[in-house]
Length: 133
Image (cartoon, rainbow, N blue to C red):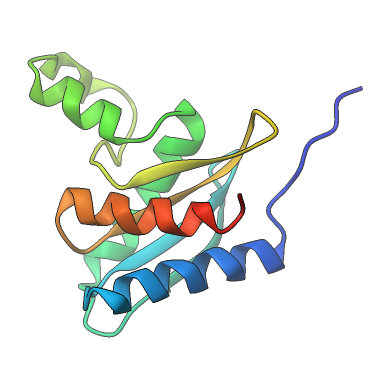
């Protein structure tokens, strides 16, 4: 039988705190969402000034990263490079800013960020995930 790590409350709070620090350091109003490996929401933090729609977008980015085991940048680039048929895939959150959380080679969850430019969303998500490394 295989065993795996999971994201517990301590890890979720550490990721949320790291994302908030990175966003505040850059004066960005974002929302960060954390999901488990099945895409279920474990935590969400919407910073003051972040648009309400960022809550849904960040959660969808996180879910897509968890399901696919890929950064959501992969899908955005694929679509932008002409694979527009992928827009009909049964996924939401195909924009950059979703990053899987990988421990010991296994995806145990993902982080999604929304609120600023795509590469800035990804920067916050990657900084948050790095706290578990």
